[in-house]
Image 1 (cartoon, rainbow, N blue to C red):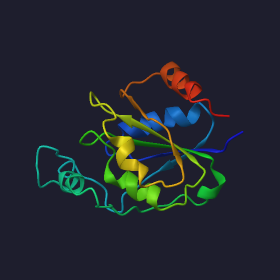
Image 2 (cartoon, one colour):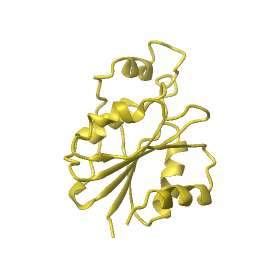
Image 3 (cartoon, rainbow, N blue to C red):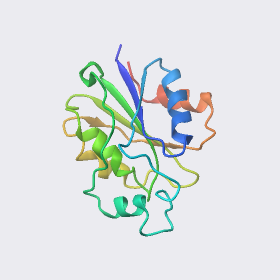
Image 4 (cartoon, one colour):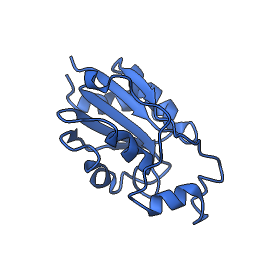
Amino acid sequence: MSKILVAYFSASGVTAQLAEKIAAVPGCDLHEILPERPYTSADLDWRNKKSRSSVEMNDKSFRPPIANKVADMAQYDVIFVGFPIWWYVAPTIINTFLEQYDLSGKTVIPFATSGSSGMGNTNAELKGSCPGAVLKDGKRFRANAGEDEIRAWIDSLGLK
């Protein structure tokens, strides 16, 4: 049986709720990715080109610092990584998270929350951050995703 981690970044709490539901289904460990400097409402204002999130997302090489790490990433075979969709992709803090570890031989599975945007170019933008890992196609969920929908998705992944 694979050892599974659900790691997530949640700016407003929506992704946290989904991550908890995913972690409960297969009985895996849960890890919140905490930014060194928490995001404020003003930071998240996508309509303001000078907001923190807008500035970060306009510079794909930017890596927001993270305040915490997974103590023993080596023990995990599968890492679900969750986030809200920002500008049709994962926030760059997800790249920061992935680049902190040697993920060679591991399976990385993105999941996201969004009211309407799909996964966009998420995998293309995450691939370089997890060399040697198998990066599966991710899934976007609505905030109110039910347990049946989550279980069906996890079952479809064929994890052992």
